[in-house]
Amino acid sequence: MLRTDFSYDLPEDLIAQEPRERGRSRMMVVTPGDGPPRIEHDSFANFASRLSAGDVLVINDTRVIPARLFAQPKGAMKNPIEFLLTRERDPVTWETWCRPAKRVKPGDVVTFSDRLSAEVLEKEEGTVVIRFAGDMQEIEHLGIPPLPPYIAREQPRESDKESYQTVYAAARGAIAAPTAGLHFTQQILDDIAARGIEIVRITLHVGIGTFKPVKVDRIEEHRMDSERYDITAAAADQLNAAIAEKRPIVAVGTTSVRTLESAILAGDGCFVAGHGETSIFITPGFTFRAVDRLLTNFHLPESTLLMLVSAFAGIETIRNVYAEAIRARYLFYSYGDCMLITKQVLGV
Image (cartoon, rainbow, N blue to C red; front, side):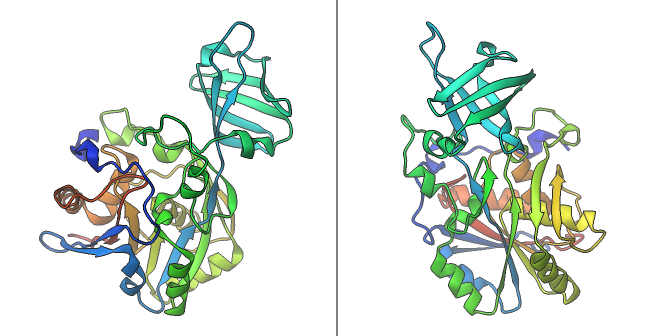
């Protein structure tokens, strides 16, 4: 398939620039069928009523770190050097994107504050590896959330550290939020649990692999960067019980889908507790073995995320859905509205 098969034109004013009030976003409910999909317009406030007792709702509890750091300039240089932490090798060693990378070389020591510095260990095409020295808690104070570039900010906001974080975030390590989770409030989660719906926490630390643009013409030539995930023993037991009892699994976000489908493939049809790495690239033709329904935001043209939802619901269904979302003036991307999609029936 071609990258351009997943193109669409989006009016710029439909790109959400501000966080929504949690629980109040618009929600499109999509059910694929033999013909055009059935599309209903709803509010996320009614999400719990769209689920049934016995369903299993899977959330990604990764926590976004303030991954953009600025090193103090050296000598006569005026502008700071930006480091975006992209992948943790160990607690003090990180792969980064550096801008401008030409200003650093292996052996250099860069200073972030009087309590935190880092040595440049490696420099390869597109990646600079640094090893921190000092107080790692400084990252929480100095760093800023790595908001996507389509969210225009003249200056970083302290409030983004909260608004670009799910209410259930726990496991520190993501460089971007699993944005479908931004819609939830604790009250909505409590309402879901009160309806007899299991809530299962898994973790996938969102990294560059999720957002790296597809630059090749033929999508099968694209390679995803790997990301780390974790499934606890309790979560594995709940998920395996749902599979055995044929109870629907509802994934919150594409990161949950990638984790679940990676784990069930690795376990040959069952979930095994533990840590893993995934570079799975889900495109049309993929056979989903774990997920039955998906809550997700609206994604960028030609992105791996749009390819995943097209695999889940069908290419034509998603084309129709996005055209309707634009017509009805839904808001798109990280701070935008959402949709609840039922998996395409085989052969449709």
